[in-house]
Length: 104
Image 1 (cartoon, rainbow, N blue to C red):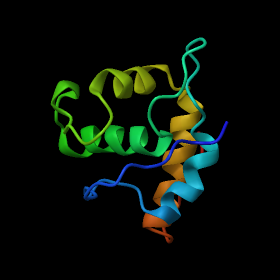
Image 2 (image 1 turned 30 degrees about the vertical axis):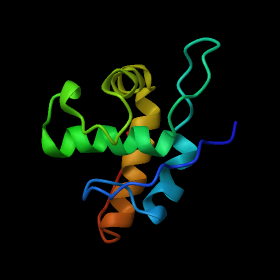
Image 3 (image 1 turned 90 degrees about the vertical axis):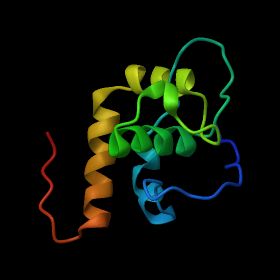
């Protein structure tokens, strides 16, 4: 399923770059949850998760220009651990190419 278009907004420092997204996109599948249609672009959901983890803000205090907190939290709680681990390892290599990242 193709991803939805990213809405225009001022990027946050925690947002993924295009290069980082290209590396982790294959690991970030749409979260299953029945017949519901995808409401938010997967990249924006990941950006929202990164915003929470990097700033320490509570889920309910996500900025209004990111996807709603309920959708982001649902995605975070229902994403397989392998998706998260694989994606983060990919981003770590892009951010710090000399870093030794081991899977597992």
